[in-house]
Structures are given as C-alpha cells and as structure tokens.
Image (tube, rainbow, N blue to C red):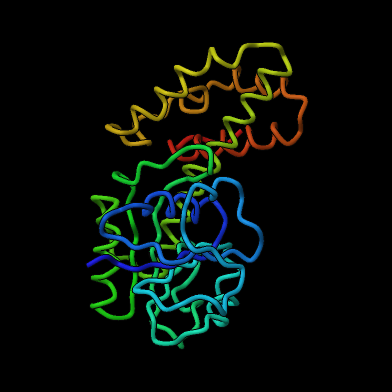
Length: 256
C-alpha cells in the first residue's frame, strides 16, 4: 500500500523531494502547498496544488519543507490533528512543530538547488520521531530513496548541521573567493579545477588532519607574508589570516 504524503513548500528541498517521490510506485503524492505561486520547475508535476492551508487533507506524512523560521507558524495553522507532521530542517528542534499533531523530522543531509537533480541513493537521511511506529514509517519512506538512515535527536542534528556548514557552505565560499581572485587578475579559474576535484576526492580515504598541505601547514612565513601583501581586499585578507592561524594552531605552531 502506497504511503500518502503532502509536501509544504516551494524551495529547493520541496522541489527535490517532490521530484524524488513523483511517480514512485510506493508513494502517493497527495498535495503540494505553497503560500505563493510555485516556480515553473513544479509545472511538470501533475499533482493537486493549493495556496490555502485549510485545503490540505490528512496524509500518512505531511512534510514541511520551508525556511526554519516558518515551521512553527505553518504547523499551528494545519487544519488537522493527530497526524504525522515532519520538518526537513537540520537546525530546528522537533518541538518547533505544534503538538496538536504527531511530530517528526525527515532531514536529508545534502546541498540542494533546483538546477541540479539530487541522487538520493547515497544521501543520508537523519530521522526523529516521538514514537516507534512513526519512526518506522519515516525510515520506510527514507529507504525508498536512500540506503542510509540515521536516528538522531534534535541536538545531534544541530551539531551535524553546524559541521555541514563548515564543510559545505564555507568551503564553497572559499572557492568563490578563489574565482574572484582569478577573475580580477585575468587568470583562468579552470586551471584550479583538477585541484578542486583532488582536494575533495582524497578526503574519501584520508582524514582532513592528515590531508592538510600548504604554507600554513609547513609554517612557511615568507609565502604567507607574500600572499597577504598581494591581497587588497581586506575581507579576503582577514579570512586568510584567520584560517592560516587556525591551521598553524592545529599543528602545534605559533600564530602569525
């Protein structure tokens, strides 16, 4: 028997989950809710869509995939009670969901946008529920997409989200800075692409501690000084100094 689900939201997470569950033989996508007009990417889904929360019907799982600050408000306005309602946030407690419904968390840990289709097969799903039966249902739903599920409480999930921000969001911003430095100085950024690939590929088999290289790792003060002198963007210079000192401290040397 198919699992009936509603999805609330119009962002990247809502889109990727809708795409993943759409036409899945063991899932019945019942309704999509968005407060505003859905983007054109959602047009391919022949599913009942609504802009009114009061039109939502009960389902086996109601997935709230919206910004963190909107979760509590939306959950309070749901027109039903004693249904399984989950959010998809890594940084929000299960208690943000109004207690008139059974509460849970269905958090796929992966970076998402609407332009790149996510292959959920290797995406870890971090799950939480208030009772065993609801957890089992969420696990069954996650296993339709992925081979990896983890039972994490709200605190553990927030810790994981914090670590993910360092690993994904901050590293992406550093790549952006590299792009801007190359662009400003008319150096082809594509030259760095093999390095970018190798940097993350080797971390599959080597700890980040052991994989660290570069002037800060070997405490090459001359190269570090030259780099700082080349940076005319004070923000970039501050980032360079902070990360350099962090690396130096990690390997037991004195700061700049």
